[in-house]
Amino acid sequence: MIVPSTVANGSVVPLWSDLHGIHSPSKRISCSNHLSSTYMQKIRVRTKPNGYVVQVGAGLLRRAGREVRRVLPSAGSRVFVITSPNVRRHWGEALEKSLRDARLPYEVLEMHDGEPAKRLHTVEQLAESLVDAKADRKSLLVAFGGGVVGDSAGFLAAIFMRGIPVVQIPTTVVSQGDASIGGKTGVNLRGGKNLVGSFHQPSTVLVDPDVLETLDEREFRSGLFESLKCGVIRDRDLFDFMERNPKRILDRDSRTMQRVIVDSIRVKANVVSADEKESDQRRVLNFGHTIGHALEAATDYSQFLHGEAVAWGMIAAAAIARESRTCNAETAERITAATRLYGPLPRIECDVQNVLDRLIADKKTVAGAVHFVLPQKIGKVKISGDVPVNIVRNAVELIRNHA
Image (cartoon, rainbow, N blue to C red):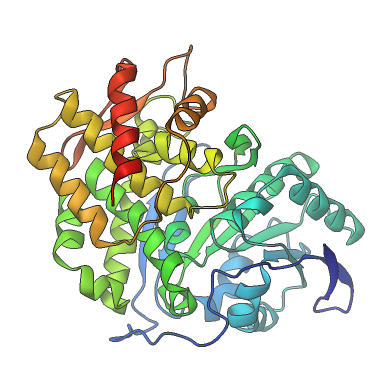
C-alpha cells in the first residue's frame, strides 16, 4: 500500500505503510551514563579512490546537517532523506532541524523498514519519486534508518543516474556497528538474500548511539550478534568484553554501547580497507551468515530478524568447526554460550533439507561449493569450501533441535 507523506517543502512522496516498527512507538528507554556530545570518536575507512570517516558520538544527530554539508557534491546540491515512518516519528525532527540549521534544501521519502520491503520494487518506486522531485546527478541521498533502509537507499544511490553520493545515518545496532560501513548495498530476491546489489561506498557515516534508546528490545538484541561476530573473527578483547558484560550492554549503558559499536566498526573498517570488494579477506565478515541467510530465505524472511538468523548461523558454524576439528570443543562452547547470553532466539521450525537447499543459492557459493567461515580460536577464523555435507546437516539439525 502506498499513501502520501508531506515533506518539508509541501510536496508529496510515497510512503510504504509500516506494518511493524523496529523503534518502539510507546516510549524511549533511558540510557544511563550518557556521554557528552563532545565525546566523538572517528574511524577512517581506507577505500579507493577516496576513503571516508565514520564518526561516533552521542548527540551527533543534532549536528548532522553540518556534516552532510561538508560532503555535498556542489553548493547547489539538494538532499533527499530516505527513512522509515518509525524512525522519522522518533528522530526525524532532530535530523530535519539540523538540515534546516545548515541551510540545506531537503525532501523526505519514506519506506517500510522490514525485510520484506528490501526488494527491487521498493528501489524502483523510490527512484520514480526522485525523478518526480527533479533530483539530478548533483543530489545527495541520506539513508536514515536500519539495515534495510541503509541497504536499499545505498543501492538506489549506486544506480540512480549511474551513481550519486550517499550519507549513512544508521539507527539500529546492526547498522551502526556493521551494515552502514563498507559499501555493500543491495536487495533480496525470492531465491536468496542480497542477490542484487552493488558496492557503493558512503561519503561519510554518522553514528549516534543515543538513537538506540527507542529501539525495541528484540531488535536491539538482534543487532548485538553482529558485534559478537566481530569479536569472534578479529577482536578477542571485544568478545571477552561482551562475554563479561551482558547486563551493562542489555541495559544500554551509553559508554558501554559506544565501546561495543566503535570496536565493531574498527573491525569492519580494517577488513574493508584491506579488501574492499570481497575478493578474499572480507569474506571473514560472513561468519554466521552462510546458514543465517539460508534460514532467512527458507522462512520467507518472516520468522527471524537478520541478527537472530546470524546468531543461529554462528552456533552452527561453531558446531561445524568442532566436528571438523577446526577448533576445539571449548572454543565452540564459548561461542555458543556467549551467543545465548543475548537471546532468546526464535525456534527454527523450517525443514532441514529446505535450509540445505538454500545454501546452494547463496551468493557465497563458488563453483557449487558452499564456503563457511569457521572459528579456529576466538579472534581467528578460516574460510573452508570443503565441509562434508553430513557435517553441515548435523549442524543444521543441532540448531533446529536446540531448545
